[in-house]
Length: 177
Image 1 (cartoon, helix red, strand yellow):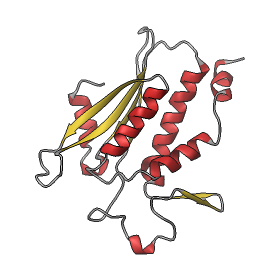
Image 2 (cartoon, rainbow, N blue to C red):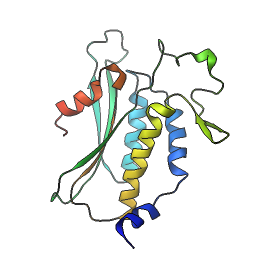
Image 3 (spheres, rainbow, N blue to C red):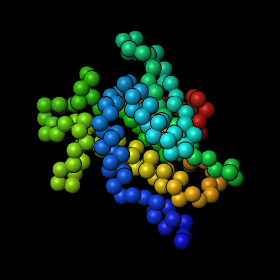
Image 4 (cartoon, one colour):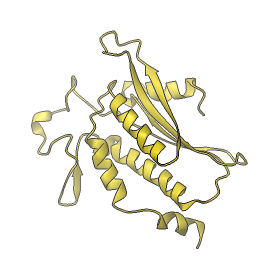
């Protein structure tokens, strides 16, 4: 079996949808992403990724309850003979003063992850929880295919994309490239 066939054979087509639903059900408004960061870290850890649950300081937010939020970085190690590849997505969802934008216009629960007529509804479904689920499932498919890896595969689920990319900046400041 060819390498790409081996990877594709390890994918369950329902898995990215179910994972997206789960991610939608965990609120992750800008600056309040710790619960989702911990959940993603546990998900990756359970699948054998080396996980770094990074604490991202929020010194500019004097009214934040903890002054930090968390982002999950997972790594599938290669043998070091080739460059690494990073797949990066953000976990924050758009909000309006701590609630879903235009909440009164929602026809589905913003945190329900409901499917109707083949469409998935929920806050962050398009931006970017489905993308994060696709990244996680692709990386896990590679892991399950159990093929040799030359470089590391890094999965970065960063915070605060709508906050100026604070999570990505912090990821770089902590030495990740």
